[in-house]
Length: 588
Image (cartoon, rainbow, N blue to C red; front, side, top):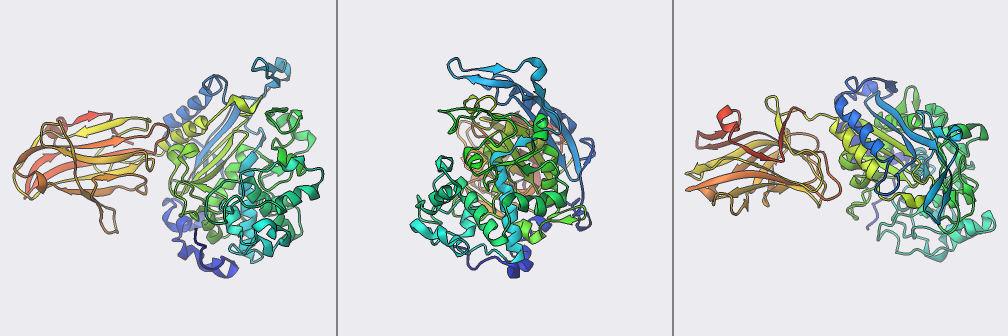
């Protein structure tokens, strides 16, 4: 991947919002997010007060609770805390299951040994969880703060701050490559096996990149550990002190920190019965201490893991970023700096979209909340945070999915389920009238919306309608098709789409996929190729086997021919002739 020209420093940040398209400050925020509200703080409220559909928030909880049971064999998590909101309103904050349930894991029988009922602890709204890799977001925020202040250059080499880092072919690795996982580091290195802190550092210094820097995306904890060392070197402060002084104290995130004190333990979710061979260390039940072995070896303070937090504190962080870096009277970043978190620096690596520290557009855990502007991260312990500026929504799922053991869970099905529910809770209002045709958000489906046979006489015939789409790129899409043999065979119909204030886009293959920007587009398709024939037209929509977007909507279907109306959905007798398979008339 070619380097971005020049470094982003304090001198350039003043104008970077314009250069980056004002992704957060203008285009991506909904109308409610006016400049005067950028410091808005959170309050509890109803779904209606948040501008969300309550039935889908109820579904969010119900879906999450199913994973307390076999998923498919063992529970995905012992318990979790769910938090969902929009704007300044937290509309859902709900604990499920247990924060502490199991005393040990019996590997011979693949069963768990439960604590006596009186020693088990239910999950509560304020339960604190080991965030695991969600901790990387805090390290990234601290780095962007230093970029904003001019003490760190995004395109500078790591070795310019840490000369020791240059060993073993790492002289060209940049700060940006650490933040976007394009440094060339391998995924993981057992630092905890070293006898001393100095020997741990030597393992990093002597690590040879698995790939030339900038040539491949490869997620690696070593990136954020290295960034921690840079931050500590340039500031002269430990990472835990930076986290407190620069982020959690200003924002009032009083339940977020490294190495929580012993007094917190009754309110902390337990993690794993950590023993070899599934764990790198024999520690027994990990509860109140960091789960990650390398973070444990580093004293609990690490750039890649080690932060403990609760759902409300993470919601405050999400609201701060959606506010453009402010919360109440506190500001931790400028709006231009926040833009760097939501800008895709990995355009050379499709499917691995990444801002500075934040993952973007990842359906595998963001589900239908995934858009090119959605940012977040997951943690190995069962945690996740998703922020969608396009709808001003945020979602926190804190689970203890390695309790009692990491092998009991796989994949991210609960994360996807709750994200789908929150995405569905944001209504899409019909373009015309009271309802529009909607595909729904089920996986592995094909839905067709077919018009009756129409006699096309001249080259002037055309189809028009309104179209709104959000599908998983590469796995799903919406297709406009025509059949002149009563539906035996179907051919693509090229069409154009246009949104207000923009130039039309031609879709010569007769299909769209991905994200429409959460706005309706006007569709026009010329039907000259079918003149002199009786033709049927349909929209066909497919979804992938695992993940979906927010779905596809079609409204105001109309076919005209040189001033003559052949079909108009607004006419009841025409609407009654539409054949809908998998589509429903939806008001939202």
